[in-house]
Length: 413
Ligand code: ADE
Image 1 (cartoon, rainbow, N blue to C red):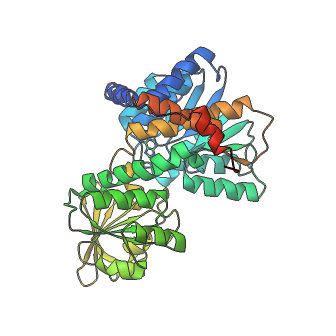
Image 2 (cartoon, rainbow, N blue to C red):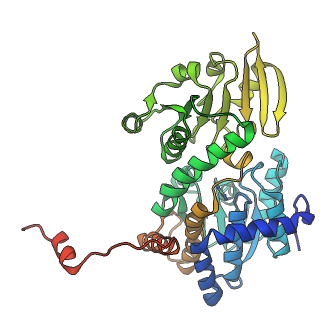
């Protein structure tokens, strides 16, 4: 079997992690059971570029139960859990990923993942879709899926430029995805990453969160929850009002840069924290990013203006500036929740990956009927996932009576 990972000897440890994750992903396990019966992916090949975590492992098991043959690569050079990669290889998944890939190795792994003549392409960040639609390769995929906001931006740009060669389901935009994964998942895992990387005490610290989208608001909420005084920076007036009315201070980054102890970028755009901000930051300020790409903190500028650079802890580097102030960068400016911690916990990935599983089935079932466009997840699938998840959480809710339904359909009371 073709694969390239760090150490197959880690498979035993990875298998235990997969078991632990599966216990906390009951909704996906239900879909796996159904796939085991109906085998929707029998004889089909799936190429997937996702963070190689225990949760992704449970998704791979689900797709394999449905009959798929799978090649998997990493969604980011720093996010692979090597024990999971090894356990998945033992289960027959062709994995091309290890933690700490160089840029060149990352590119080679993506190419390997695509060299599989896939029927379905699953992606997180659209690096794989970028290669598949770049025009240089034969691609016979009937459809694809995209996990994250940054990836959706890229595939919408591909659609606009008329280069999309297959339909793509915007998994990120399902209610059962972004309302939970982006907000609560990133909220918790980002704080987890900051604490694992630094072990700092958060109460009383000033935390600056760049961006108040679903990710930013989750991060701001959870940082406040453990005692930080949170400042939000925004470019969107509406989101800025929301942040203000949610009780956060709102100001431009130029001002926040002077007072922050901890900075977290969550915008999906470039140049959020740049040289002019580094120059006014306090000695000891901690910088990290939780957006998909490592473009939000200008790490190149930091390296250029630093007079000294040292690794202090596994996921933390100290940059000393002229005059002696020190700034501490976490996880190289890559997504701190996956670089320094383990990404979102299984319970929340349960929802996201139900969407991935059912989106993959949907593009296959509708092969030939969809245009080469970006599609929202069908409302019925979203509602079904919410219902399964709620049931597996042991939560029961009321339902509308016939009288209530009738009332809601009336206007002439
Ligand atoms: N994205 C964020 N957290 C993740 C996780 N635990 N597994 C896969 N992708 C993720």
